[in-house]
Image (cartoon, rainbow over all chains, first blue to last red; front, side, top):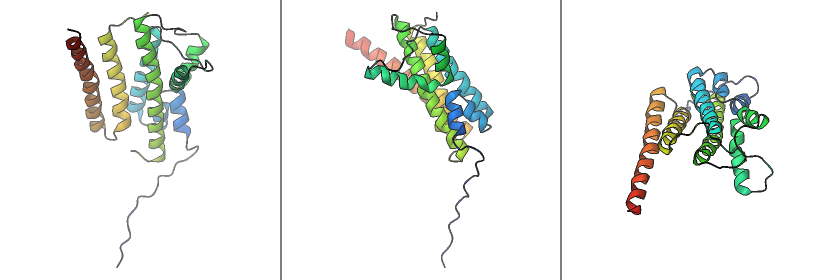
Length: 134
Length: 59
């Protein structure tokens, strides 16, 4: 007699499936807030925002699109991961256009990694939303 | 303007990155803390090891 395998029913997600992904990208931690993981949301928001702010305070270079330089384009792709923080930096011309200090180089890496970490956090929020992760 | 030393920058970087790694790469809170600490030790430890290596090579 063949036994039926017990597979868990996929969780029902209401509304737009990618809302946590998009919200998490725009505002660090907001995707986790949407999935009601308050502490994770707070920690992600504090870490990524503080990393970005400290990077800017170190006179980080904020990458812009359309320079034609491959490394600048990669830097821009990483920077844009911070979502609304990147827009704020561009609107208020925060950071520096060129790296002139050693600490500015550290700051540039802080901003780039803040963006990359936010991409990871947004994907994690999406996995929580669709039930792939608990 | 914020001008930290190289080591302070490393400590800050390791702390922020490890917290996000811990949260995103593990499911249970206890496993998150353990993995975050593991990442932090690897970040800081590898920097200290590389620093000593460069010091020895330079001599």
